[in-house]
Length: 104
Image 1 (spheres, rainbow, N blue to C red):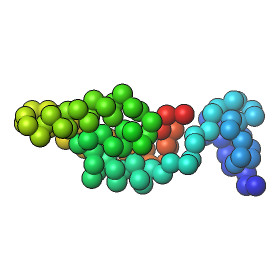
Image 2 (cartoon, rainbow, N blue to C red; image 1 turned 45 degrees about the horizontal axis):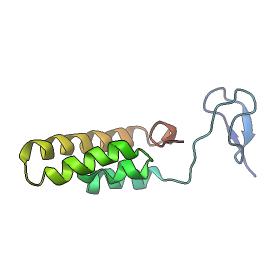
Image 3 (spheres, rainbow, N blue to C red; image 1 turned 30 degrees about the horizontal axis):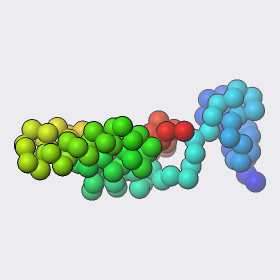
Image 4 (tube, rainbow, N blue to C red; image 1 turned 90 degrees about the vertical axis):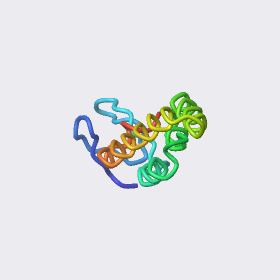
């Protein structure tokens, strides 16, 4: 058991705790990797695979539909490609704070 610091209040608590005992801040589920999220956004972003991985199913479905329809039409493909690139950049910027990306 290791001790970690709360991202909100800075208090020490167990790494096994789901929430900080001092302020109640919910700790992020670290079972999912930010590296995997960023790689999925880069390579399969046009189909929204990274959104499904992050637990954001509605956004994933929209990207999947736009990515498949985008194979026939140019505009949806351009929009979803830009969207995937923005998600890729956001993933890199938030590499140390996965609670902003993953759904709890």
